[in-house]
Image (cartoon, helix red, strand yellow):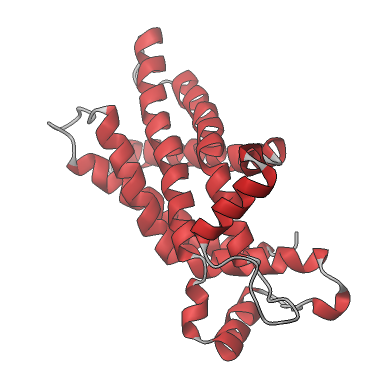
Length: 233
């Protein structure tokens, strides 16, 4: 549970922003009321929503990476953040306000990949399942699409998550040099030294972390929307 407070902040910022942006965009793209936009437009909406959410959620993401990385460092090298508030305040004091946006580029790319895969695949899978069983908004469609969305999101986003984690967890060596100059440098060095499979290292663990979160998010969101519809909100 290391970094739990940062995870909460990330959920309140990144998750709400990306879902709200995605639904607003797909609603605006409807060719007519009640008719869903085509898959390529859903994918575009997912990319845009991911970028919007990532920019808002980057400070919390930075805190998560650093708080969790502390457990793998020698005691003398640990930052020792007490909570997400302490982490953000100390980052600003020691590194400047702009440090809160460290890794913004990789974070945006990761969020765009995740959202393009997870959000677009959810809507498309739900439509296909509902058409197959002949029932719109079915529980089977919601549950099946949620599970597919979680897996697709994990496959799309892990390489970007790997690079983002490497960048945000960097510490200077004895000479003050960082291991990577940026995201592109991280990609090239990793590819040369370890090969392309390194970007999918730990996929089972990553999928077990990402997929349930995405699945539960959709199930809860659909439940909230159904309740609002019943109440006429």
